[in-house]
Image (cartoon, rainbow, N blue to C red; front, side, top):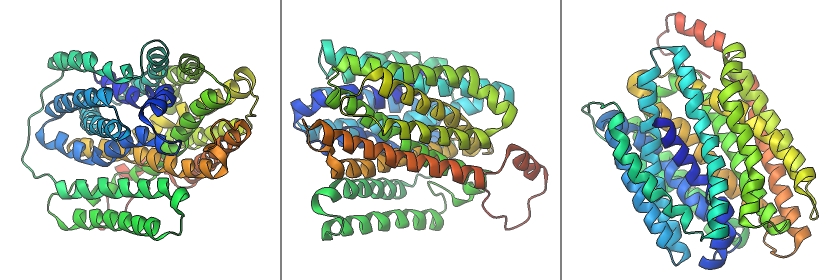
Length: 465
């Protein structure tokens, strides 16, 4: 049941990919604005995940899980009925609110059910983690089917019956009692608004200028809101994100890895889909089918191989090597020509990139959460999901700006489009390589964390990498 929730949340980000060009035609998005169909969901989802984690800990994970699905259904109805670009973006934002409640509640329930047995937790996390690429696989396939033979609106309509069936089946989940505490709504608003303003500034900068007054004021405003968030967390009695949580072993380094992983992987997926449709001329179904080998490899590796490798070598080497392999695949993809072919120019490189993602994602997730006490499981889950989605949104915004500046806004000009997409792949490769190097240099090994946990903690202990 919990894996199914993860499946649906991730499918919500992938199912729209192959439908984007049709949505662009019908709703009037420009090439640069098109990313908001993705980022409207990701920004709200990432910004509110901490609030979702906190509510999960206070109100009860099962109640928040149910509430999240009800909101997800409402957002899907709005997105499917949209007749203008801004209504579509609003619907995606409402879906993001629902996802922000579902994801940490599901992770909290999973940790509560399996934390008592590390071996069982590893199996559960493998299944839960595999649900992500499975959702991605189903998303690209169904998105292609619906867009090619029905209408793009069906990529949202599909959530309505599935969401209703999920709500009917929530009785299978354990009930969790609520506990006393306050909710830091101001902090949630500050962090979400700060992230949204930062992405908005980066998206518009190529059009209005990086040195323009508007861009500078927006970036300063975003920074001020994020600083305000941390001031609030330090000053109130029951913050959304108690800063003491960063003493959890490897929480900081694992979340940094997840940020850079999202900043590299999501732009790759986004621009590869545009390359297939806008340069190679693939239809929606053919484009979705072309992405299937990559997502199938992800699912197989996460389910059958990564969990076993982690038990043998630990999280640190898998995260570091995975990010470096992802970087290698992205460099390979950057060589795609305007007259490329799927079998020669796309398939091998995309499989290498998928291999890197499959090695890094689950180990980074487990490294970020395994040291958190049960009462902070929802918070730790919210943080790690937040950093991945924040990285995704900011990475996509920044690399879209790079791609547009290199010709990706010239629809119909295949050499210019290819140059723009290639520059985005190179930028993503740099991000992934940076993440791999930092992880291998900074993150503590499993043995070091175990030794640290066995030793008495001195007073004034610093944040652990």
